[in-house]
Length: 373
Image (cartoon, rainbow, N blue to C red; front, side, top):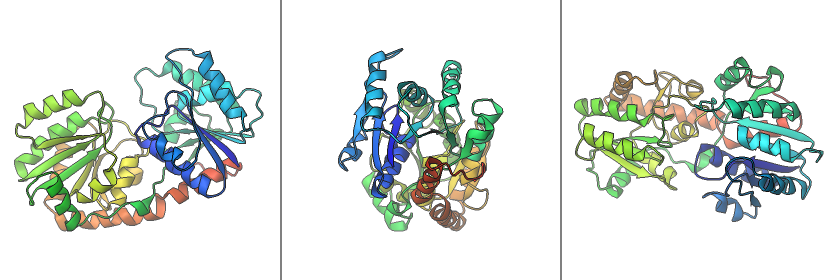
């Protein structure tokens, strides 16, 4: 099949990582793949360039941009696209407009989150109109499908579930050796306990609540350090909160990193404090690294983290509950290790890139799995 994926860009993030991994696997399986970026190509585009997978950037400006739309249309037309796979709302309705009259055989859209956007009314209205020319919408978790159908965004007959998948074999399980190396690398004491979190520093991820919860953890657990991996618009605000709450540098801001896979197996615990979440790539990666997890019970988190099996779930925006769950696992290392092992076994069976790619190929061929699959 000749498959074209349309995204906003390929900057660093869970959606972008999923697209790159999926395109890479589809190309290896014999499909002809291209990626079209509505805006700039992005920081990760070089990964596809290195494999000879074309990446086109349309250079869209803010507001209506007819030139970018024409660039997108040319990218879809030459060579002719058989399957158009778009990612999220903005890329979708632009691609549908640009593809008018091109005779594309199959149009599939993936919604990667729960649609938690403070100014999304216009965007969702344009998206809904574009669904008239869409064959299927893949929601990344059952919770997202229920929400999208309930809000009238996606028709029930077009909504299905295709959970994200990762390259599990590229992740190493947490171990004492990995922990020792990470502490040495970060110039931390050998006995330090490390809690890590990966994600954009923005309101949705609510790292402010994680920092407040961590201040409580430090009162109970000695030599504990919080590592925040990622960058974003709230970095300065969060750094100020951490400095005011806990002088002494016990919260480390590691910024945007390309070595997350090397960092994860050195942690003792993974925490995710999101207010809204789809099917978190960060949680899948934590499972692949055999880490015990504490996460907020929002979106699809409960479909990855099962209470008492591979981690703990807590209410969103509840610093006390988040702190209590982290303390419980830090004070019971044997239990934490067992939870991490269960997470690794689960992601190998259910969260692999191979499983996700097979589900998408079924969608491309018009073979839909049950909505809750």
